[in-house]
Amino acid sequence: MASRKPFRRGWAEADRIVRGAVGWPGTVFLPDPPDTLPANPRLFLETLQTMLEVVKPRALDVDRVRVTFDEDGVDVDLPHASEDEWVICAMVGPDNAIVGTGVAHEHFGGDGGGRPWPVVAVDFIAELLRGQIEVERVVRAGKEITARRYLIDEQGERVPLGSTHLLRPARFMFWTRTQVERARIDFDAAG
Image (cartoon, rainbow, N blue to C red; front, side):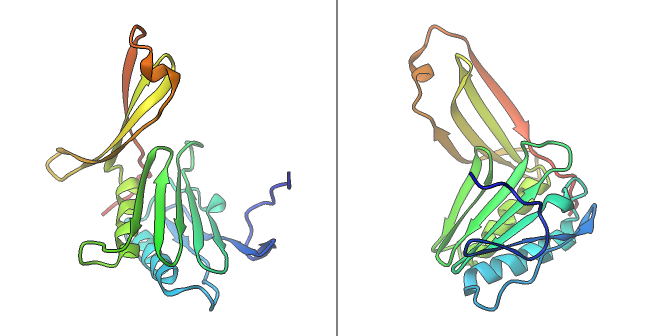
């Protein structure tokens, strides 16, 4: 297993270029993409930078932000400053993207409802940063069996986004205690 290098601007990992971000709490500046980056990942990165300037997530650990470029896309990790498990990850290619943190993830591509899907993917990241996404985990026999994701709208209503059902032996242990846990990831972001 290769050792992990610290997140610093501009080193190479095999055929990938890994770059860190610079800034201070509430402000982050992502690195410039290589000229060869396709249009959709480039649009995603530009929109992400603009969004970060607007929402100013104060609980984002700027020193651990990681941006990785390869021949056809970009991966971005946005870690929380104090909650190690809260890392927003985005894997963006020329035709689609997966954005999420833990079980709160969404797939983007194709038609974005009249808007480019890279912009819709950045909207989801903004909702995560502002604490507007609630994750409901159903746990049985100590194992997660279902995860549901909700958008909390302006009126405080829960709007279903999707769910993940995990096929584990605990799913069929009906005699054991079932717990429902709810959590919101919040990066102390504005706007």
